[in-house]
Picture 1 (tube, helix red, strand yellow):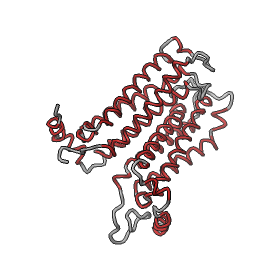
Picture 2: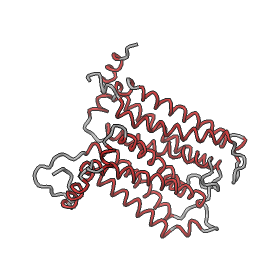
Picture 3: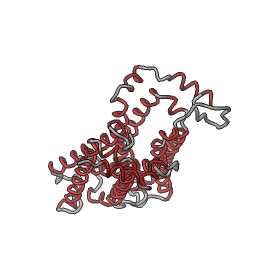
Picture 4: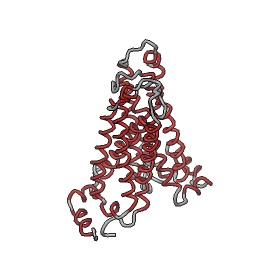
Length: 172
Length: 180
């Protein structure tokens, strides 16, 4: 399937040309900055939850960490929106690079893991885990380790996008 | 300050075994990836503690939440290390870059602000009978901390859009923002 006509159409839209071509710092540079900030909160808080499961900050009642979930999700949605804008800006660069699909897959798996971890520690029978949490199962630990691995992979893949693309735009 | 910047760039010169390694195909991207991971640990450790001071998860004892701070500092240490690698390799791209000047300014604010927390609020916040609600002063410090570190991220992310061009004419600003 040739997606070039579709990519060319996206690149021809006013939004795409604003993202890429506007001299405003609120266009491409600003979107990129929001993408880094959203990452900090989404991954940072998810990692803090994972670390808590793995034994860090043992006196933090784990169920209370659910109060941080809205901040995590705000970071996630900030990145979903800013990510879509960056994708609209450079659709060819992203969609013709296998590393981009790897990044999306890793983020998808990380979010599935987050939901599964949340169900266990916030909304499940283990919700009232008290220190020192003897009830943190090895399965939960494995989910936390997998979450950290996925975020590390997603960030690395994201950074590599700047180095591994084959075509920047349809013109190139 | 101009002379100091020029001296710094000349002295570092981007000529070292480290710079040679950083110029190999994978070293720079790997260091960047680590820099972003460090960023996440910093926000996850320090940022979540700031949020706790501001009342998020207010049933979590502040002293218990503070145990995440070493992981934030670990992330910060990763970023100091990887950031140093970047500067050692391309000194002019940072030392003449206004975005980097702002990044350093926000880092200094973040560090001094953290020191202020430990000097002024630590005892009250960490006393065995401390209330779950942080004192107002600690909340102000938390807001400054979050703003400072978001400023650091912004300064870092915008570096590439303020790359210094070759100097033309006399520079009158406090810091040199072009390559002589």
